Image 1 (tube, rainbow, N blue to C red):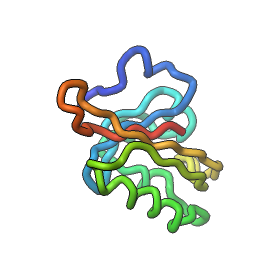
Image 2: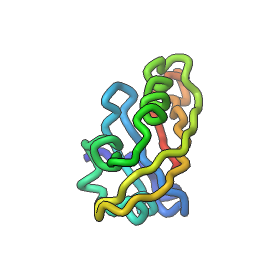
Image 3: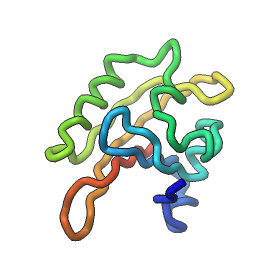
Length: 118
């Protein structure tokens, strides 16, 4: 499994998840803060989606869908944020202010991944 989060970001205090740029936006990598916040191991997270891992009964699907719909136009997307109720692996809910940004290739400028900061 490809590791995207380097040594400088793996220990950041803010939880981070890197996803593919195409729906369903599968998780490519997460840092330790994300593992600690969400309760899933890196191995459980990689290949899954934020929706399947973190959404639950009180997750506002309209807010979540609005955030996702902004990601679909990858060429014009830069950054977006939302506050949603998410659920840890132990089913405990938490309020999550998530910001999603585009990671771009330094040479081409093309979006290569999305990064969510929780």
